[in-house]
Length: 387
Ligand SMILES: Nc1nc2c(c(=O)[nH]1)N[C@H]1C(S)=C(S)[C@@H](COP(=O)(O)OP(=O)(O)OC[C@H]3O[C@@H](n4cnc5c(N)ncnc54)[C@H](O)[C@@H]3O)O[C@H]1N2
Ligand code: MOO
Image (cartoon, rainbow, N blue to C red; front, side, top):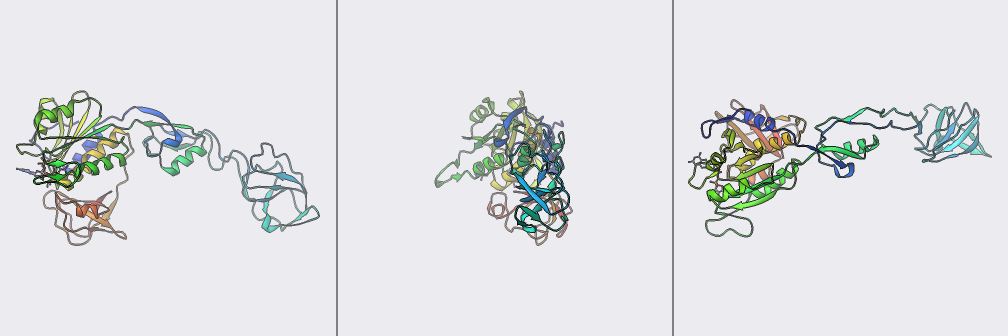
C-alpha cells in the first residue's frame, strides 16, 4: 500500500484505479440459498456434487429399442421413473424425453420415424442413438465456477444442475454516502443559490450495480463538525463523500481526514474531469472515497476509485478489459488522461459532444466512458468503462 502526503501528489489514472482495486481485503463469506444469490460474488469455488445426466437419458420421445427391428412393444417408461428395467433384443419400450433408458437399449427412435401396427414397431435402422450418457455433461467434483465470479442467471442454473442448494458468497460491503453542500437539496425545485443533488441518485445506483448493499445517504451541510460526525459514526465499510474535495473555504474533507488520522492512498488523480478525487483509510479499517462535487467529475471518481474498491472488498475476479477504437472529433487528452463519454457503435466508440465536469447530459446519453490517455489520437484504441 503506497501512502501519499495530503495535497502533495497527483496519481496517474491507471495507478489510482489499481490502488483502489488492490488496497482492501475481501469481506468475510456468508452462506446464502442459491435462489437468492444472483448478483453476489462467490467466496469459494463451486464443484458439482453429482453427475449430469445422472443416468442414461432418452433425448427424444419415441421408443427405446434393443437389437434390430421389427420390435415387439413391451411397455412404457416415463420421466421420473426410478428403475426402467431391461429391454430384450427384438423388443421396444415406449419412452419419454428425460426418462432413464432401460438396460439393453441400443437406440431411442423418435415417434416421427416409426410406424406401429398390431403392437409391432417398424422403423429404418437408427442412424443416431438419441441417448444422453450418464455424466457426459458434468462429473462429480467438476469445478463449476471459481471464487470471485458473480452469480449470473445462467451460472445459477448450472450450479443447480450440479446439485447446489446454498453458496458461499462475500458479504456485501455496507456504504454510506455523505452528500455535502449547503446549496444541495434532495427534492423539489432548487431555490436561489441551490442545486438538486445529482450525485446521490447516480452513486446509489452505481454502488448497488457494483454488488454492494443498498447504501444509506446522509446530506450534511458544509460544516467541519457535521462532516466529521458523519465519518466517525459506526456502521459502514465505505464512506463516500460527495463535494468538499477541493480547496475552497467550505471544503472540509481534507481537514477532517487529517484530524481523524486517515491515511491517504490517492489524493488527486491526473485526469480530466475528476481531478480532486481521493481514497483514504481510517484507523479501524474503514475506507473513504471523496468524489468531486461537479456531477460528471463525481461520476469519473466513482468509476475510478469507488467501483474498483468495492470490487476488491467483494473479492471479485478482474473485470474483462474492453477496448474499442474511439473515432470522431474529440478534444485531445493533453498531458493527462481524459475521460470521454462515448456511444458504442458497431466495433467503434463515438464521443458524445459537449461533455463538461458539471454537465451530465453527455454522460447520460452515453453507453460508457472512454479512457483517453496522453498521446491518444482519433481512431486509436481506448479502454471503455461501460455503464
Ligand atoms: N481553486 C480551485 N478551485 C477549484 C479546483 C481547484 O483545483 N482549485 N478544482 C475544481 C474542480 S476540477 C472541481 S471538480 C471542483 C470540486 O469541488 P468540490 O468537490 O469541493 O465540490 P463543491 O465545491 O462542493 O462543489 C463543486 C460544484 O458541484 C456542485 N455540487 C456539489 N455537490 C453536488 C451534488 N451532490 N449534486 C449536484 N451538484 C453538486 C456544487 O454546487 C458546485 O457547483 O472544484 C473546482 N474548484
Ligand atoms: O476535474 Mo473537476 O473534477 O473538472 O470537474
